[in-house]
Amino acid sequence: MARRKVSNPLAFAVLGSLGERPMHPYEISTMLRSRGKDGSIKLNYGSLYSVVTALEKAGFIEAVETVREGNRPERTIYAITAQGRAEFDDWLAELLGTPEKDFSQLEAGLAYLPAFAPDRVAELLEQRAGVLEQEIAKLKGMHDQMRSQQFPEIFWIESDFRVALLRTEVTYARRLAERIRTDDLAGTEFWRRTHELVAELGVQPADLLRDPVKYFGVDFAWLREVPPEAR
Image 1 (tube, rainbow, N blue to C red):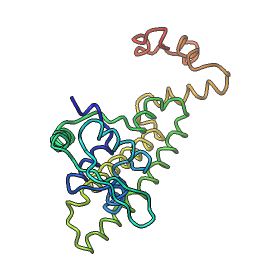
Image 2 (cartoon, rainbow, N blue to C red; image 1 turned 180 degrees about the horizontal axis):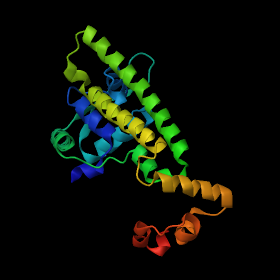
Image 3 (spheres, rainbow, N blue to C red; image 1 turned 30 degrees about the vertical axis):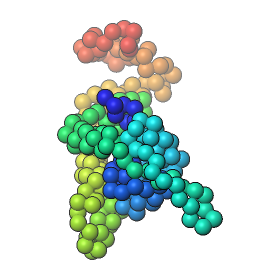
Image 4 (cartoon, helix red, strand yellow; image 1 turned 45 degrees about the vertical axis):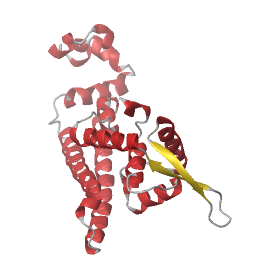
C-alpha cells in the first residue's frame, strides 16, 4: 500500500490538518497543540518537518507558496493533493475499522514479571496504578473545562477513549497486585519460593528448574512440557 511510504501517526495528523486548509508546518504544530491533539499523537517540531518532507516526496502534499512576515524567515505553505486526500480517507477508514496489535509497555513488562520477587512486582503495579489515576484526574478536569466552555464532545473524543483505557489498566493493575500479594495468582507460590532459593543458595533460576525435585521437593508436570534448552 502507498501508505507504507509514510506510516507515522504524525503524518496522518498533518494530512488531516491540511485537509482543512493550506498551512505552513509551524501553523500545523500550533493548531494541533491548541486542539490538544499532542495528547494522542507524539508531536515535536523537528519530527514535523521530516514528516512534511516525506509527505511531499510521496506526492500527498505540495508546496503552494512561500511567505515572509516581517523579519521572520520565509515559510513554505503546503496544501494536500488529491492523492493525499485519498490516502487520508483510506488511512482513517483503516484506523477506525481495522484492529491492529498495540505493543504496550505494560504488556512487555508482564512478559518478564517473574524476574522480580512477587512483592516487588505488586508494589510496582500499585505505583503504576497511582500514576495512571493522576492522569485520569487530569484528563477529566480537561473534559470538565471543555464542557463548561460548551465544546462539543466530538472534539475531545480521543482523550475520552484514553480515559477508558486508563481505567481498565488501573483496575487490572490493582487487581493483579492483590492477587500476587495473596498468592491467588496461580504459580505465585512457586515464583515466590524461586526467589527465596536464589537468595539463599546463590544459584540461578535455571538451575532450580533443571532439578525441581531437589529444590522444590516436587516434579512439576507443566515443566515437562518445556524444552530443556528453554529452562
